[in-house]
Image (cartoon, rainbow, N blue to C red):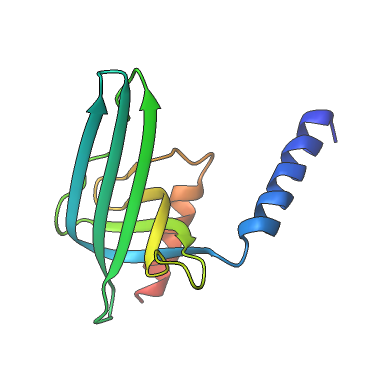
Length: 137
C-alpha cells in the first residue's frame, strides 16, 4: 500500500467517522426541481437547488437541497425534469437543528437519462441499476 492509498484511506475513515450516522439516500420520482441562481458583483456566484422527491411505494415526500458557491465561474447543475427517476445521496440534518427535515445533497444519479452530478468511478452506476432491477422483481 503506497502513500497515496494510505492517505485516501485515512480521509475515508475520518469522513465516515464524522458523518457516518447521517449518510443516507433517497430514491424515487422527481415532483419538483427549483433552481435559484444569484451572482454578487459578477464575481461570486451562488446556486441553490430545491428538489422534491416522492419515494417509490410511499406517501411521504423528501425535500432535498443542493447549495454551491463559486468564485468567477457559474456552478453547473444537471437537468432534472418532473417524473425523472433519481437516486439522491446525501446527509440528513443534525438533530435539534432547523434543517433536520432536509436532505443535503452530495450526489444525484438520474436513472432516466443515465447522468450523474458527481461522476462515480468504475461500474458503480451499473451495480446500482442492477440492484434496482432486482428490487422490483
